[in-house]
Image (cartoon, rainbow over all chains, first blue to last red; front, top):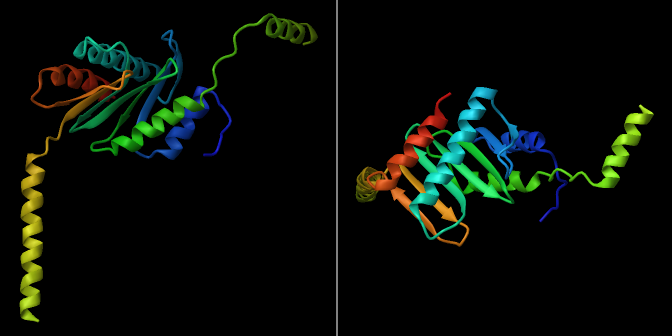
Length: 136
Length: 63
């Protein structure tokens, strides 16, 4: 296995689109619900993210014993919707009809794993930022 | 040679019929859910939970 450098969400999504020809659109949200990145415009992104979160909520209602959903995929005649959750992040993606499910899920999971966590605002980071501001 | 040709044609016909029968039986719409505890469920078109997941997914597929 080749270790790859972490990247931000926009880079990870660009790589995902480049590697997986089956994926049409995708959006990633953090654990707090904030948008990390998307391949769409604002309106379409909102719809995609809302659908992803609604699918997770509906999937949780299907099995009262389970506490966390890690994957939902809905395959319809007109296309498919995938939701994959890992490390607190959620990616929702759409594909055309009859995608290769295993491959799409693998690509989405890899995309989430590539995203670098935003660094917490430590005292050292804050001081660095302040120094940079003063110098600039 | 003619017997061989007839055999090949019969084989091709059998495969075509088989694929039509199996293809007609396969549901074209389905949903699956996996949970963190390792359990998973698959919902076919006719199942109760599928309709709700499908209606949410259709909203996401609209551009």
